[in-house]
Image (cartoon, rainbow, N blue to C red):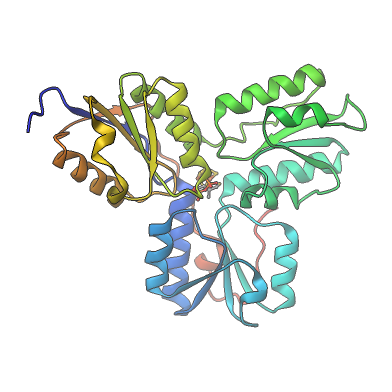
Length: 324
Ligand code: 10G
Ligand code: SF4
């Protein structure tokens, strides 16, 4: 096989963010403390490999608290839930452990604060996404969803001097800023959130994929179809100049024909993707002659989150709702 000049540009940072590490650790800790089964409402993170691995250890994934037997333990996924979900869990006497990422909780708090101040809140995000459903549920009377620039024309607010925007944490930074500009054209007094809602991990992974994309004939993004941030990495790679960009759940999905006439392959992964899947993709690429790996580092990450309170102090037995 002729491998002359063939190389892989491996993005850094990639893969697990601090919120995902915390959420998976929470399921594992709950299994260790309380034993199987542990019910988890919604996929703990949007990754098939993670979900299947936890299922093998005794986690049971459901979409609704009504599917959890009364009196059981239930974990809420990293994407967050609406207050009504906490209420339903309490009614069923479930012991709720909230694995919502603290950076999602921050957006919930912003929604609560600006709704209390009677702002019209424009929430930029993807309709039907679990995180958006949760944030919207904090203040449904004050929030309108903006799912891309095409929605801007139809938005109407009560008082154009009292309007602000928030966003899902895993959006494309560039697309979101374009939507904000369109909203600001319409509402010049539009207020921004006090700090970035698109989280550090989303921003860093997009920064890194941009750096590998200009030189890449193909960018492979590892991530499940349900993973919003992984899909945004594909979009970002294409916009940054990659000739082709593909989302794969595992190495088996890679088609050697994608690499015809390609000498540089970029590789990255979404925030819910374990490193083992990257290793398998790199092994597959090596079989295709791409053995030479260059790491392109765009940022350092040191963020860590402690476990949900109940798992730090497991003797409590009433349901918890961490802030807000
Ligand atoms: O990118 P999304 O929001 O679809 O989620 P994910 O599970 O693939 O990645 C981790 C991100 C979150 C838990 C949302 S804050
Ligand atoms: Fe938290 Fe960001 Fe990870 Fe979501 S993507 S879990 S907001 S760190």
